Amino acid sequence: MQISVVKKTFSNANLYRRGYRKDKTLEGDGRSANDPFILSQRMNLSYRIIKRFVDLAISSTSLIVLFPVFAFITLAVRLTSPGPIFYPCKEIGQGGRRFVYYKFRTMVDHADKLREQLGDRNEMTGPFFKMKNDPRVTPTGRILRKFSIDELPQLWSVIKGDMSLIGPRPTQVIEYELLSNWQKQRVCVKPGAVCLWHLQGKSGDFDEMVELDMKYIENWSIWLDITILVRTAWYIMSGKNS
Image (cartoon, rainbow, N blue to C red):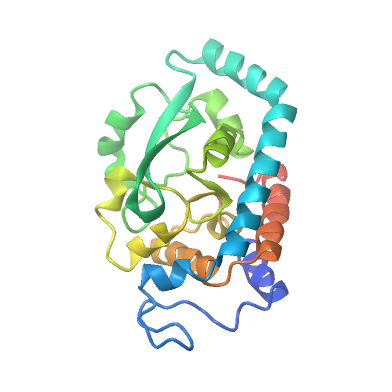
């Protein structure tokens, strides 16, 4: 399902005509595809204003509507696992600017220290860490992750302007320094709460995720954002998220 969904998304927006590759140039300008200025300019000022308006409208409305859900999850996390309710994520934002966003904590309190011990079980290529059946995840956390409910506090980061609803997956500070130069180009726009990688089923191929990010940046449109949001909502409600 996942790969076909991504292809269909681009097909619907007539976007598969230009695929990003790290060894090619962008059409018509003769400049390197790794040029962050060229990539970010694909989103002109009017598009950015529209995108920001959509981000604010959907995020603020969602926070109000989902307030009872936030209260219930807060109570569930507090009662089922010792430690803080929220987990702070130190990330690299647009242009390399550092920021912190929060998620509902889904792991044991000392999860970061345990990550080093699990390094050889990483199922994703590159610097990002991804592991099925992660022993650090709490029982409540598994339910939250299955439906991506732990990500809801990111809506506040979208309102603040640190993130967008749709964009490249956020890059942790400790991961950013491990990226190659072409991979770092994904931070030329705001990171997103949702990205094309989610629709593909969270492949373990890091380069593939980066290429999807670059395709999104190069081909951005309001219609593409709406398409990704709708398809992501369906994917999450199906409970297939991992």
